[in-house]
Image (tube, rainbow, N blue to C red; front, top):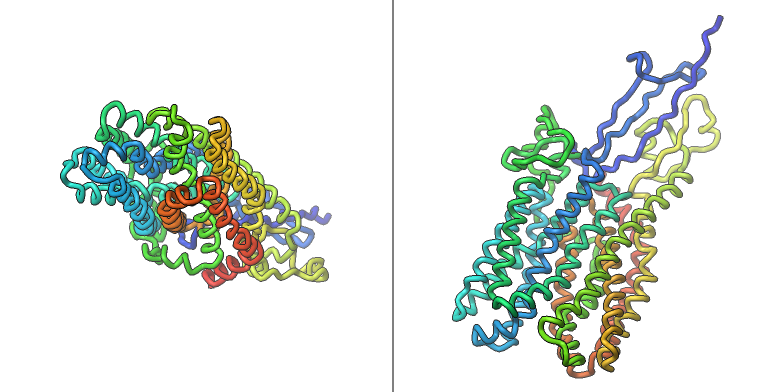
Length: 561
């Protein structure tokens, strides 16, 4: 009697969600073959041909709860960057009196802070992508701690020292945002990155809103030095907590988190990760002890040569300037339009903008994850059937070659359906599809805000409009941050540093001219002009939508070859 014939399992390769080409980044697959053991449930086809089944290792060893915790820690660290800047605003008049300088000269310390806020992450981001997130985190926090202590003790006859210490403070604080984005790219796949990125951006968003409140209360009650002592204490606590518990996440060093980093880079209290990583041997061990090859800290400047990246950075920077203008003009405009406000109570007017920004970052994160899942479902359902051999699948998926029908039916070569390569996924269309609605609403709310303050409408009107600007503005910035990390997932810190550089450059330019514009043409027409400048981003977004996928595929193909 002829034994019953068995039908093989179809080969189901799953797209590797790897973020770079290092050995530590590739998901580990296990091949199961029939006859190996009693627990291997593998069958054969009518020709008694047995095929392996690839089982993909999870992208990260961390649980979902641990990922949320790490994103929250990154958000808290990112909170320090804008906090160190915005907490300063309410104390400017008091510091001008204390140092015997004009308000314009004290404002110069704000300008120099923004300059270093834009430049310093360009260095730190590249170092974090090469040597790891954790050592750069600790270095930046230590620098912020020392500079804040120096500012709290600076003599009032040493204006030059105030300028120098503000530069060091910016260098330490500003890089937290770039580092946090790098952590998110290390632990989260594109399908879940939107939600974690939304939580992470919540910290940098709350800083400009909470900072003036804290600064106003402290400087008004305890003097201007108290706000720097507050930063010293808060930074010290964060430094201790990060040093004790926050693990290294750079995939070039720890892979999915299961490999231990260098001994000096390990946490004394490893509370994250269900199992303590074990030291590996062979090629994997070499990855643990050597920095990632090709990760030059100066590579961050080369990102500006990529047209798709540059378009997103410019669009985000222009829109960020508008959002930043709303926050920086709140105190003078509200004090002028509503004389019953005091230095302490005007700080409370930042709350609606902060609440809107917080809500926007969380909601848009969920929406981005939903859009990505829907996109994957559509792409997978229409994937082309190609050869079951892995190398043929990769080559044909990259080239977009479809197997002819007569070949698909041939018994010589089995067919299956695979996920397209990441470079073929419509990332730009998926991430940018919400931008038009967000853009229209935020432009309308910004113009309304300027006119409502000029006409001295009821204070609730500009506050509600600030809430809308914060809601939509934070959503746009989260979308931009997410898509640029998708473009360079293995350089999350570097690409975010580039984003921060453009934003600070354009934001400082806007800050330099906004007071002149308000005095010359009033707040209403000032925001009409600023929103008109933002219209420049419309054709840039259209170009990114149509040509971005082509530029990205070309770059990824070149990198692979």
